[in-house]
Amino acid sequence: MDWSAVASEGVIAAALALTWKAAVTATVIIAVALLAERASTILAAVLMGLPISIGPALALLAVTHGEAFVAESARYALASVFGVLAFLVAYVRAARFAGLWGCLGAGYAAWLCAALIIGNLPLSVPGAFGIALAGFALTRIGLPRHPPPLVSGEPHHWGFIVVRGVLAGLVVATVVTAGRALGPSLAGFFASFPVTFGAAAWMLATVASNELAAATLSHADRGLVSFMSFCVCVTVLAPLLSIWIALGIGAVVSVLISVALVMRLQRTRVLHG
Image (cartoon, rainbow, N blue to C red):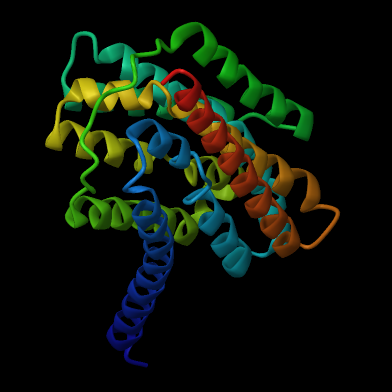
């Protein structure tokens, strides 16, 4: 047997698997970004809370690793809300004394600490839900609200949108490909890696300033209500129904909540002129 040929075929197969998973996720994220690009910065921050990374990640994990794997991963995806919120708090707090890269470093360090601690805990559904709620308590205490930034209505450059989608696609594809090695708990948590928020901050800091990026992220926790609702639906419904029905219901619920949040913000802006 030609072992070099076998190894070469294995590398090609792995590369193709990584590519199609990244492409699927990137397509979804770029489509959502295009829909949101003409919204105000605060509304865009709310829309960033949609489960546009975790949704494709759990779906791909179901295809590659089975429904039982995803049912357990979903609990840790729910708990991962705490890590994403910790990222936002650390980024906005660091903006008082650091630039873009310092803020990103602080944010991802906070997320990684949460991932390494929570990802290794034996979690029940109520426990995961409690950890997610603790994340919102953290933002209530530690996330300062900056005034809504004033930006032009011009759409963001195509390059930023594509880069954001590709980065998120690569993260999701890597997590899905390494799912067995990570195990369902860490796979569920690492699928929530806040690459969308990080890429958005990089984009805003590049085209404007890091103050604009921090001001936008200081409002982004509102959108994570839809992210958490998606994770709750999948976590609760996956053991009762098929994972695909749970993912579908979670997606619909999260979109409806995002629409309600956007309408509320729009109404508030109208009332306050």
